[in-house]
Image (cartoon, rainbow, N blue to C red; front, side, top):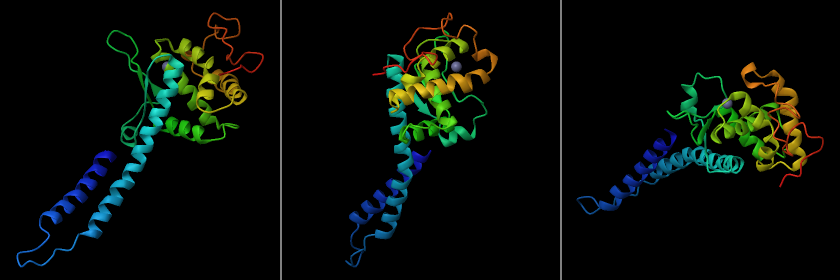
Length: 225
Ligand SMILES: [Zn+2]
């Protein structure tokens, strides 16, 4: 929507310029002045509207790279736009659609607020993430598990928690900061999650423990690459 408006404004500037170039003189041979003010106005408005569009695409590109590294395969992260947010009634912070065959798609939509939290986390010093940033990093990690093929919520949640540190690391945190973030989610947020996201097997030594170095219940900070 914003893109089309920006393109329309820039096209307007171009058509004014072309019209001027084709008829530089009137019937009496007098020169037409170049419509400088109108063209400048249209170009600056159009370019101004493109700034958030470009930022949005750059964020999606960066998050897709992180998600692909976590999934071990190319996946795509879409960030919800303002227009999509306006008609959105869902409470979840992100989702992955499942195909007719029940297989999750290799693309996810992260809600606008969570994407904005991921953006601010990327730009932060990663030392003291806000609660919202911490949750947003986990949401990305959780949706990656669906894109990697896990369909059950409790299993996806547990797999994600064991990879939250890796996600934070890919988003710019150092190994210690990344591990602290993963432990923060495990201690503070996970116990408050709805029942369908929680499993008694998601503990150290439990059936869902993948014995990853980056598990939040590990004794020491992982040596993340
Ligand atoms: Zn899920």
